[in-house]
Image 1 (cartoon, rainbow, N blue to C red):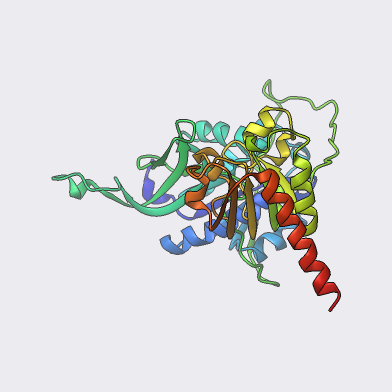
Image 2 (cartoon, rainbow, N blue to C red; image 1 turned 90 degrees about the vertical axis):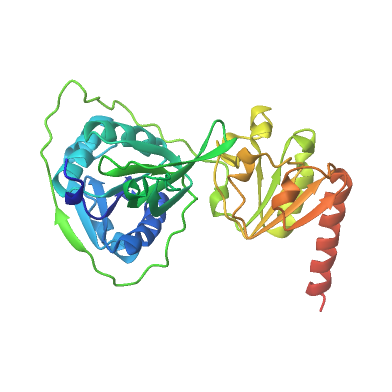
Length: 352
């Protein structure tokens, strides 16, 4: 392997039912930043059947080039044909960096592809940077420090520490990235990208699975990743019935209720509403942390919120370390009073 032959920042543009997943646009946003640091171009790899109409959106969100692998074998996601498609693109076009979303599909596809192209994979990353590796030069070995490396940061040991990982000896440098962590750029209407049609050929083998039936689940909960205001509750709320207080506050604010892992583990709320390392990463304008201690596993999923308001009776709760505003008190008293005051203010404005 000649590392110098590998150039550019590539992203896997995930699509489902010929609709781009949000993570694809988020990855393009980060890829643009990384490519700027490396003075390289951004390439989106679009895999599916009849997906060419999606290339314009990828161009507008930052792709300089879109490699389209279009084949009937790729109509629905299956591990083997998609792995063959992406691995073939990597072997043919030799990207320096390959980013994949840490979605259900990406967590299946990423490891398979990295093994097939004989490189490493850092999973579930929350931060990506271009820099030196080792991070700190070893005395007497400064000449061995490598530059322009992809530094991939992720929670480790159950979220109790943060690890920064590099892949200095193999290419591409591969990472899966948590949805909601990176920010997509504002689209540039009418932007153009080079479109490359590439098909490595598909021949069914023993690794192909046959899809007998696709059952689509009807989502009954709101997507908390899209919410501008989140009213999030933890174990300290006390009971599922007590979440009514949070529902009322969210209603007057026009927000959405979310929760911590402890609440999901207790069976009070569905997994789709969980914020944190093992839940969703969110960036609302306002995040209410009510009855949430603020352990690092939860903070990893919401600390980039614009404004964090914590309500907790424990004055030593870690949540106050990252909160912009904090109220030390009984949430059973504070939350109803807060809801009441907001209603009064809204009524006063309406009467003017």
